[in-house]
Length: 197
Ligand SMILES: [Zn+2]
Image (tube, rainbow, N blue to C red):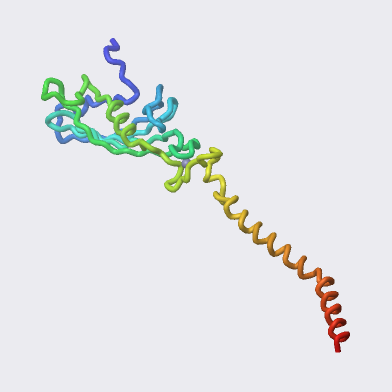
């Protein structure tokens, strides 16, 4: 009896077949058995995908307009931190009646299977070089530390000159405070002068 076991993204359209002008809305809630996407960001297995679907009967077949929502997981391409992001895509696809011009999608018996167009729309929307934030500074090329975690990204370059200046200041009062030697010189010269007169 089960000729075509309908998948999670199959939508029955028996009531719309051959009735151009008819329209109906429905929803799909599916859980992914396997991950979608091969890049740095993907939709992981077990993630749920929600699709709002509008089905319109047209002469050539069933016109599907859909908005799909899910959540992506991956890592920042600059600092490698784990990131998740909401995903929302819209698409429109004609599912043609069998035996017409070669189309990408066909009405299968009494249903349309939206898995391929939903997956393609979502995967194509995933960023090629995802970032945790638009201005992510990435990793320190020497230490490998995540620069976004270090508020002052260049602490050593700032501190060194200051320390040098502070040390100069610290040594100056020490020389000025030692005034015993100049005083004794002055008193010696005064003594010489008074001696000469
Ligand atoms: Zn980052």
